[in-house]
Amino acid sequence: MHLLLIGNGYLGQAITREFRENGGSVSTVTLSGDDGSIRCDVGQADEVKRLPRADFIVHCAASGRGGAAAYQHVYVAGCQNLCDAFPGTPLLFTSSTSVYAQIDGSVVTETSPAIPDRETGSLLLEAERITLASGGMVTRLAGIYGPGRSMILKKFLCGEAVIEEDGRRLINQIHRDDAARAIYHLATSELQPRGEIFNLCDSEPLAQGALFQELSRQFSLPLPPSGPRDLDRKRGWTHKRVSNQKLRDHGWTPHFPSFLQAASEIAQTLSR
Image (tube, rainbow, N blue to C red):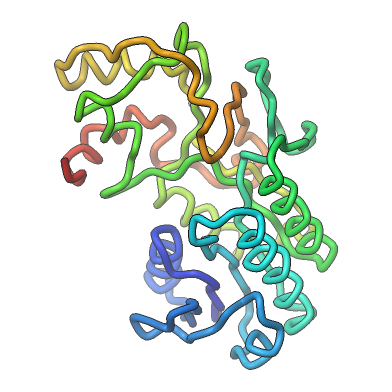
């Protein structure tokens, strides 16, 4: 299988490695064209039309930490341009569990209401709609962590973490390599789930207070202090238990069912 990968950042590099280690080939596409990638602005239709053909397309480009305008350009226009340029080629769009705005601690599945409270979330839903209408598929990713990356763990180890209110807020995460394996699984499945949405998270969402209690035990460090809610979080303030049951029923199993199983290994890779 030949993959056309839009975006070759933290997750994209793991996807590339997963495909190549399993005998596939990958053409990577980035805005800069660095590191041997094809240079292309996916939000420009004329540039997308010049990209090479592939058996499967994954759109996991970052928005460059931009706001609504960047989301419109990279995700909405990007997905539309890919669908128009490559009709019939399966497209997988990596969306976000931030489209779920639940704050009641409920279990969230792919059929749960997705009514984001931010414009960026609404734009992700529009990109999802375009992808699904073309026969593609969508993965809604929880917060990604992995080697060299875990803001939760980094703040804890540096003494900057805060437990919000009573610590009940549920945190949903996914290890980068588990995410890459899930995307490879969906792309290479004999029965590709066209037109489907999959939540991509680990199997054990953790209450913030319980998470820090266990980290305090593992690393023999004091428990963080309590404080108010962080309402300025990029992904919004939510309290929900995202379910990965649909993806597990499809045959994928995370190597790291819980963040706590990977914490000690990840800690060794973080700069402080």
